[in-house]
Length: 322
Image (tube, rainbow, N blue to C red; front, side, top):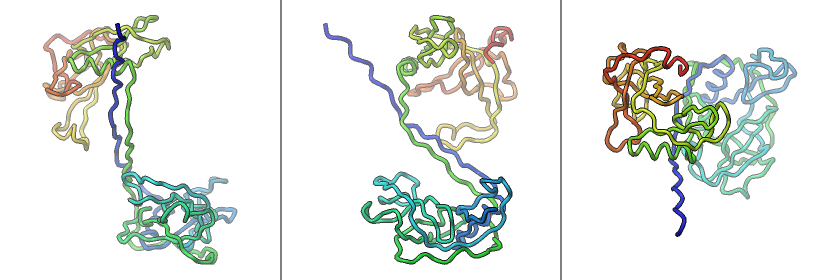
């Protein structure tokens, strides 16, 4: 008899993306506004070093820095790495080099892209200059990239008051992480069971607690878990929050705010999982509410949980799962 085939490993592409919003102090505001105006600014430290990009506080003394200076838009490559396959959102769509460039007049280097025909055209010590973006808004992307430039080092930095019309006061930087997730044996078993609308966890052989979703090991005892236990499908709301800001993704486009997201202790489980509560006004959701999953065709996970109509669970039955 031939051995049973090994189960296919599950994997899925995942994206974590959000906008990062931050306000700017006087030094960063001047630096980014300067880029919009095709001016490269640095800041002078208490020891007289010129830092580009500038920082608000001296990295050695922690003293506040305000002595802004203008440096040249030419510089020298101090180190580099070739990027043969540019990714989404990177400065150039064709192969390029990541370079650290020390601007003429600066003592530190700035990381950016160098447009070069190939790795043989890049070297430490290469002279380069800024290629400015056609449209500039007050962001690091106002430097479209660097390009090779045959020039002698420019003179030292000159004083600058950092004043510009309509200064940039804040930025919104999109953060995005693309990766492929492989869940492993325990979570693969859990996900496979969900395709049959069953919720399966694993029991610790030492403390006998049942964890959903399973991780393959008990987080308390540290021993491997392999004993499958079907839990729920009903459960109890242990705690919850009211969501008032609409998420910017396709999954939640049809969900109107406000709505409730809750931790739910499924019957037979010793760890609460999270899910959306529906079928009840948001201001009527409460701790102890008994709920059951609602599935939609083709979905791997429950779409939401709704009240079962049962009496609320006694606090003592779920207090350890808050």
